Length: 487
Image 1 (cartoon, helix red, strand yellow):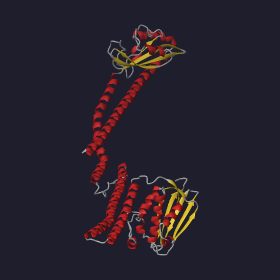
Image 2 (spheres, helix red, strand yellow):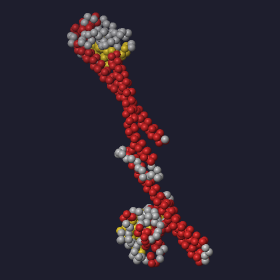
Image 3 (tube, helix red, strand yellow):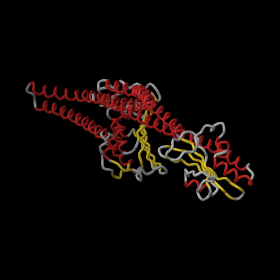
Image 4 (cartoon, helix red, strand yellow):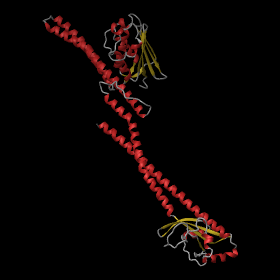
């Protein structure tokens, strides 16, 4: 239940993030669209006012200078004002420019102002719509501005009228922005109507996409629920090449390693139980036999000696298992000390009887100095030498070659015999615990832990152990160890 709740919260979180981002994007788009529309419509209004004002300026400039005073009086008296300033196709029925308290509609009659702020047309008492714009216009600048007269919003153009090198008056025209604002408001309402619809569509689409995206997670969870200690062979589905598939492949690799470790542990436990069962059976048989009837002192001594031999065998087996367990747990197996591999080889050979040690041909090239454990490395070579003696033809030589690679600061020790060799299908398994090939079982009774222990000890020294073999020719074991300066 906890896993399902977590999955739901992730889906809900993704859906909320998706909806929030879409909502912000929609609001941003609508705001940007509205702003661009306002700028474009306002530019259109300015263009209309500019065209009309330019036409009036051209008309004024076409009047001869000697006649302009008379025209000013006629315009001020209203005799030709409508024909000169507002009688055209667009504004023939436009109302005169109102006072601040009058109703404003459409495009209004232009006004002309002298430098002193009064009406340039004689007889009129027009008020200025934008005082600051008039001051700038007398400096030669055409000004577009937005002003409010009462509750009405006007777009105003203030344009200078040039006469030779001076500005005798400026022309100020205005247009009501009610239709402009109405258009902006209508577009804004339309956009606001669309936002909920688009948001609902995005939420539904987001839900479907999120459900589809989370489907591999559900499949992985269901497959993971089927995996247990008794069913580690189950694997997660890998159906595509996306990130979830990479996660599934990574988890499958981990499950494979866990499965392998479980199988190894189960096999190790079974083999250890089997190996311990035999000496325990011998011990129990010897003691039961000794206690069954009265025996002589010599018979008791023989029984005790057999029991001691069996106990020592069990003790060695337990010691080997403990060593492997400590190596598996990455525990420190020894305190490093300076050692000479050649001395260790010599000591290992001394543990054999002369008939056995005489078969070894030892060759040392260079100084085989390293850091490690004398006793553990001696165990390594004793195990290798025992294997060579047990699995090689009697009387055949066993070669031990030690070489110091001073350039790479590496030590190489080879142990080669002339035995039956190891089959290729067994070569990768000979270092497994309790593994013994059919040839090994037929020639010698052992625990099957020797090479596993050798491999663990060599790895603990920072080295490697490699095995190569040719059937009916012989086997070579190569140990590589770091030299003294890098150990």
